[in-house]
Image (cartoon, rainbow, N blue to C red; front, side, top):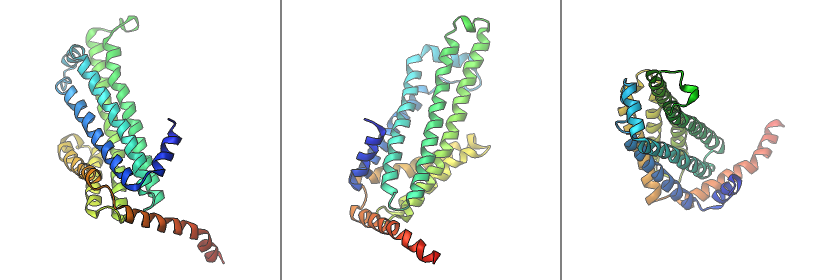
Length: 255
């Protein structure tokens, strides 16, 4: 199925169905994300390239499972982005599009980060081109790629921070979702944005918790309640009327 056909089907779906599907995709995103963290747990030894290389080669399947989890998270977030774009267009189509842009850029950056996860296998696998390097040098290179993965991945989180802020704003401006969810998404966005700070490593436990709480509450609400379909349709009709009246309003201003 092409992306255009998928977007057309999403646009034709009912608002409650879109909301519930977004909740399902959000939930599916948490599951492989947890799998990725669990699979890599203890494999990377901070500051010890040799031990890290030994662990990766000894538990290659687990490490690749973590990579698969990361890729599934990205795929699920792209689906959430498409659904949220359609869901929040009636509130403000420009802000909804901007939010989707930030999310897709974040997904692309984290997709790039996953390439750095594969690099250690290339380096540690050896081969003729790498035979000029000592074992310690290859281990150091593999460790460097993993550090780059972490740094690039955090850049993606910053873009998701802006995305959560904009989604929070859209929820606050909407009539079909509780404003408390908007506040929680703003808090979630601010949490992810702390990765911009020099002390992000020390702040991350305190940043991830409110971010996960905000997105988790939104996920739960979408799964259980969805959205107020009647309010969504009224806001969509109001937005349509405003767009249809815009040319005449601009003409009257010009005169």
